[in-house]
Amino acid sequence: MRPLLRLAMLTVPLLAASARAGAQDTTFTRNSAGERRSGWLTGASIGVPAYEGDAVTEMLTIGVHWTQLRPGRLGADFSLGTMPRALAEGVAVVGARGGVALPLALSSGVLVLPSAGVSFVGGVGAGGGGATAGLNAGIAAVIFGASSVGLRTGVTWHRFGDAESALALWEIGLVRVPRPR
Image 1 (spheres, rainbow, N blue to C red):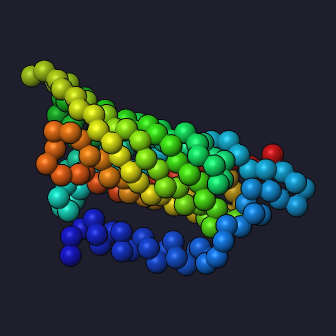
Image 2 (image 1 turned 30 degrees about the vertical axis):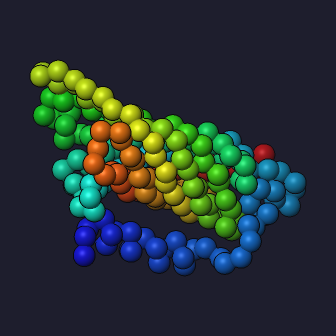
């Protein structure tokens, strides 16, 4: 079984155990005092890219992300990352993703974030540089408790115009969830 698929299969039971089946839970967006939870989900993650179904662990990524939290409504979604191994070898690589996400509250402690947008990857080293752009689509889940810190995991598929197939990026990291207002 391919490594990325194996990781995804290990993640699904975690998400399923935390989520309750049914419609969106309105207690997420409004608590008993009538306060709403909105703002920005901000966090950091590590990621493993996969190309044509094969994980490319030597291209491990680190990144930061920001998602506008307005459950049930489209909001902005951004991510910025790099590859530490490339930096160690003298090549500065930066990847950016921007678009929209639709935060869906499965329960008071579980969010699902489908997203879509544009992607950009650029690099520069001693031999020169280059860049490419494309489109992306993804899905992430955020699991959190009473604290404002949660676990975020997801996968984003990036389709660049000059690539033969899509690149998948599986990420896991921590996220700050805004407190109710």
